[in-house]
Image 1: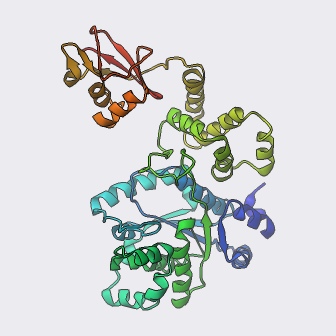
Image 2: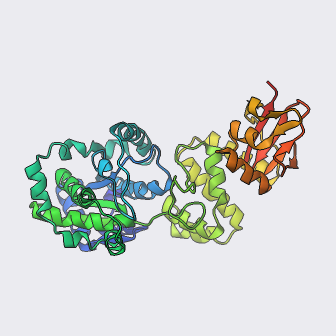
Image 3: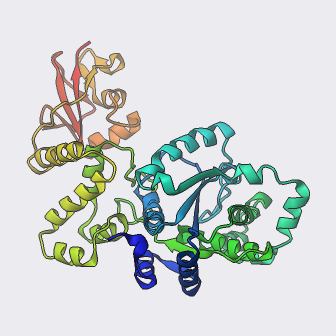
Length: 403
């Protein structure tokens, strides 16, 4: 059934599923009805500051909900915050975010543009950079913008209030961030603005600033923050608990399989189109089988079917049946790892890419996470007869050959 022909009650149920906040529900219902009468699509805005080069599954919770608006015939305005990234979003921060260079911003923005269409409908998406309007504001216009909000209101923000109470510095430019984001909504005449729950304050500021500029205040819709594969912290590349949407299929599949059985159901809700009836059925089968189905669904969103099947087969053979994977990368034995008496294992792991540093390699060795030719190694120096070594660290493998 074509979703654009759904009744308003059906549309509301579809859009509300998985949301954390909807402010105000009656306003959204009214605008959906107005859109149906006039044929004018709603303008649904979300902003992403290009602070990292790649998107992860945590970002796609919001992207998927934006796609739901597109399914109903509305237009998504994807705002790349190249100007606001230079300020740095203070949301959830207990210190001032370091400024980014223009080169970093532009490089990351290009990758965002190519990645969002793995989820969004290109034909119903407008991509714009907020420097187009923020960069042209004269200083008197900035002053007028600032006059629409008080310092006291800004300091009501949880993160600002906490930092102010603790005596942690708050730079003046950080106070401008919510106002700059609000002006984005004015510039594009947003009907709806979406963001994570940590963006709630900023989105509400947008409602007030739009009203002051003579526009109808936008509807605010927030989505939950997705826990990473550790099941504790918000998914973040800096914490290493993320699943990147550009990662190879076998890596994505394996990482999904790492999550807990409890977290699996949250991933089903926020990262798939599984209906409540489907989820109820999946809860009746073995958790491993339900998680395999989840891994297939998520990986299929970003990779061709053949790659998904290969990833599933590789997981089954290597992880479940403990077989040696095919196509293991080959690296040459590093010269600095060689000793007269053998090999410095920590230096070898670092140089062949199985550890991020020599100290990390030492920790992995002492933790018993390193095997060579099928035998666990917990000594830093091992004997070597010059033949090829098959090295495993966790789920990663290398064949280390003589020069």
